[in-house]
Image (cartoon, rainbow, N blue to C red; front, side):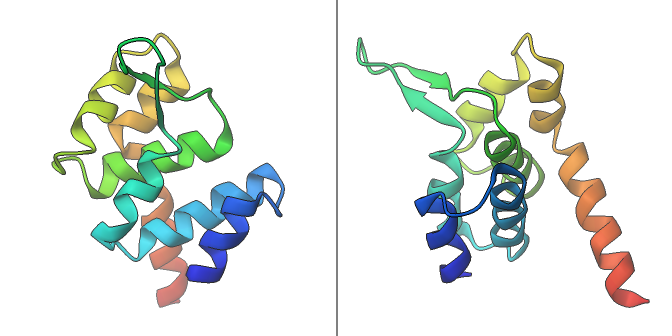
Length: 114
């Protein structure tokens, strides 16, 4: 997991592989990864340091989906998930619901059991 995080952070992988790496990190469900995921979902404006969503990308959607699926009640994740749930973008709203990530992880677990 630390190697995956480093490679994602350095941008050594293309966008779909970074998103897959983010999902792999999130799948271990370690609360210590929440700030790392959150950094891909939100930014703070220079003026008044308000929180806003990061630009939509596969990495942002994967991180948001993981936060919504695994840590929806985590105090530091709640504001980002709520902000994303109000987005005009349907992909962002879907990721904020956590449904997509839950479906992906259920399919992965089902494949692993076969």
